[in-house]
Image 1 (cartoon, rainbow, N blue to C red):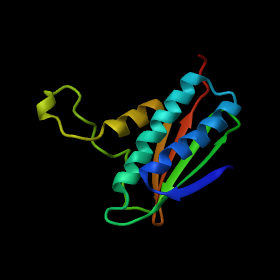
Image 2: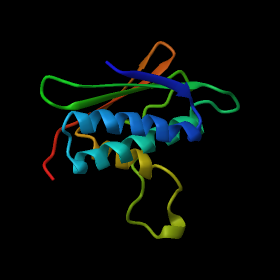
Image 3: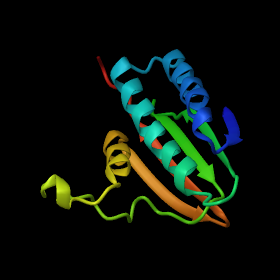
Length: 137
């Protein structure tokens, strides 16, 4: 299972996204699936970079593989502050723009784009697992 661990900095997003895209493309995932994967991955990685390590440095890690069902499995981990995106309140999508709170849309987008999205806290690590099925273009 390929793995990459990098400092949780925004300048490292493209490297992680590119590695996963190259792998998924080589496995025959469609461009539609690839777009979903890239958007979901970017949203979660941005959250890790911006919020997991307030006032400190930390690392983020990504492992990925294709399972026996032909799904792409992406596991993201960090040892930042605990945060369960599955229990985050849904953003207000219907209210007046000036009355809406900032934030939450990226998590909603990632959870919507993935066919399955799971979180668990294991020891001092946040673990997010996303599953993406192959789609036809």
